[in-house]
Length: 234
Image (tube, rainbow, N blue to C red; front, side):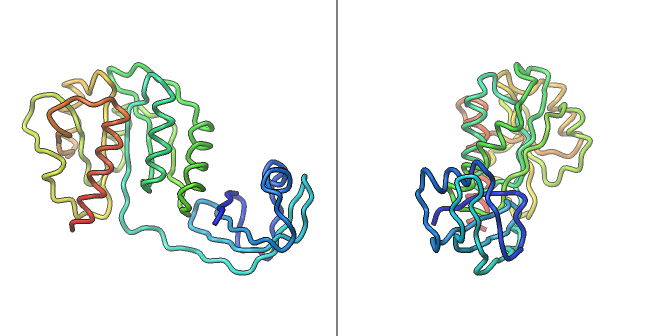
């Protein structure tokens, strides 16, 4: 199955692809009338149809059926400091989309080296990963927010991973059974001591990801994978 994405699609009987996708379908994939297509809006809709018109500027399809999938009961939210090299951040967004995280929030910390994030670029990469992994829910990618502002949002079952020597446990030893989990990952220079104290006062659990130090994007992926693994055990 080749999955297409368009955030405007709904359960309508007919759909006209965008000019860009129409050109891709007609010129690159060389689709023909009668060929089947599957689309999603990234909000759980699975729309199946057949192509009825092959115009490079406006390919049309007629619906066969559509399914509105229920959102996953388990949610995983990642708040992470943007990497200095955006290529690494883009790689992370791609992998997190494949894993099926619920949202990604860039947080600006005391030791952050990057404070500007190009959200349209990250969303484009996330959409490509969604299509490749054939999923129907696109992670929410939020605008950058300061660490302090993020602590003032509603954080459910939060864990802050850092390398500072404090009273913390390994994330692999945490009994993660809650349906909603939030992970915080700091920049290459880690969270500051004051940030860690504020997080703990806000109810977040300090955790370790292991004895070695990881790059920000590695830590983010490892932490999310650990939560998914813990949930499988439970």
